[in-house]
Length: 166
Image 1 (cartoon, rainbow, N blue to C red):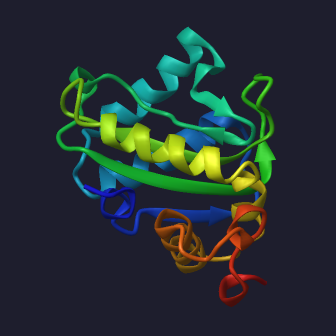
Image 2 (image 1 turned 90 degrees about the vertical axis):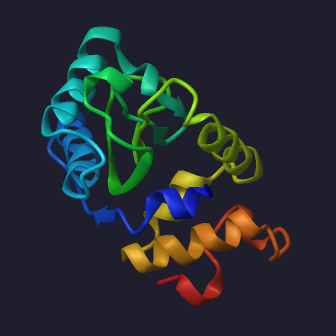
Image 3 (image 1 turned 135 degrees about the vertical axis):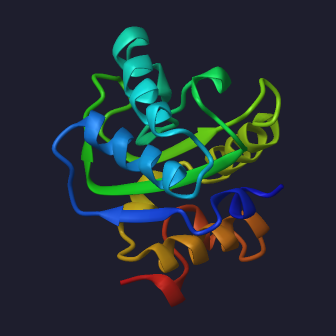
């Protein structure tokens, strides 16, 4: 399953949030709304961050909130929340502008997602900045489509493609 298939339109672009916990909650609620996780999974995502610290902020500007499969994950899926003003997780990778939440029903279903995410981060050092420049979920999806195909040369590496820019 590709990253875009796993997202299945669960994308939200926000100007700002009140806290990292609010950002994580929004990303988890997108998963719960489609029945991929139990409602309590969202609270477990927040609790995991509180207990283990900001380890989910995996790269400058990017965090991957999640909980364990046994915390109420029914199926594999992703959500993506862009916070244009950024949010602090108390990490050296702050401010976080992009949250890619995931749910996985077992300990291996998300491995392909992590591989694809690593490719995106390796090819696009400024992913958080580029996504924070976009205004709508449709623009984010179009930008990701271009980046994942990798067919527009180097132009996508630092900014969104011209047809989705402001």
